[in-house]
Length: 84
Figure 1 (cartoon, one colour):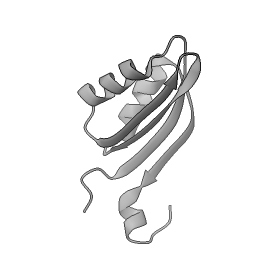
Figure 2 (cartoon, one colour):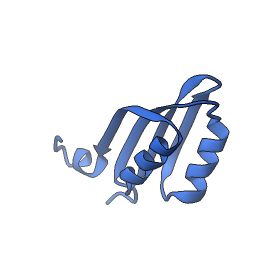
Figure 3 (cartoon, one colour):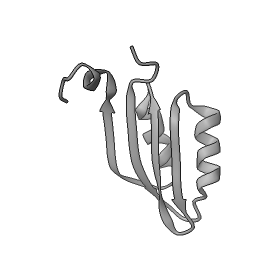
């Protein structure tokens, strides 16, 4: 069984977003692993994060900008060869 079930990916587009600030906030406020926060300086920030509460990551992203290209994959189902 996986410790963190959902592979959560999204882009956040907003004014003056800093990938280090976003990465630090996610690390301090959400449980998960495999965090990647890349971009910023006028470009959208791409988030990749394994968590059990993907909706919290989406809510945070929306609080700092527009979110899009959202993918939430259930890695537990994938590990059993199930789709969807």
